[in-house]
Image 1 (tube, rainbow, N blue to C red):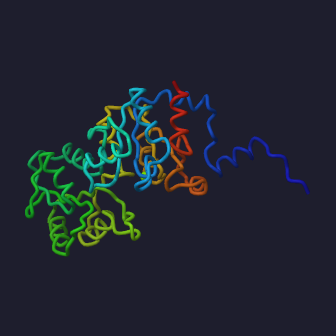
Image 2: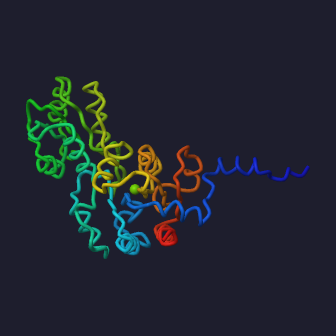
Image 3: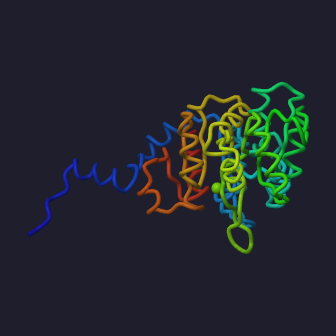
Length: 293
Ligand SMILES: [Mg+2]
């Protein structure tokens, strides 16, 4: 028996199962024409580990050319903005300023400034980078009588520190986490990230944290604030659907997935969240942005 000819209905059903219908070049240009600002993830979009991805320099040239506002956003709270500016410079990208970078640590400071006055007493479970950013934002870092516990990746975590954080939260201190990533890649394999430390403190204190990093709102709000941009006119570029795409979507930001990081055709097809655009990598994305002129 020959299978029935595909109808418009079965084609649509197939498109729903396998992913978004690829917009025509014209429709894509129309949608991209509205974009005034870009938020881009870094690992898996600009580079993979130490290896720059194709189109890296051209991507920045294109944004500078178009006078497009941009922010580079990462959940990593342990590096400073300057570390990323320096990394880009070693890869041949000049002109990026610290103000172009949002880390989960800077986003946490921005979030706290909207909720708590300068001088608020904070106990930090985290590294020197996070402490420096919070101090610079006007907060007072203390060991006792803290109003807030802020927790990021702490590579010098001890039982004593976890004990102190737990007792403070049980005593009424607010509990903030920089980012939810339970692990991150080290040369030897995956190792505990900030999310694993948050899980420990949450289990001990009985209190879930407010988390700032992707996919939560705090990170995207900090990026939009820095760009002074309307979400509808902003494009989030990322390689991870569950964080970059899902988080941006929740705020009405347009989304572009690049296939140079963690997702592939199978994971994209299986995901209930579909990005507005899918690009093989930066070269395709640059071409599409140019076509939208
Ligand atoms: Mg990434």
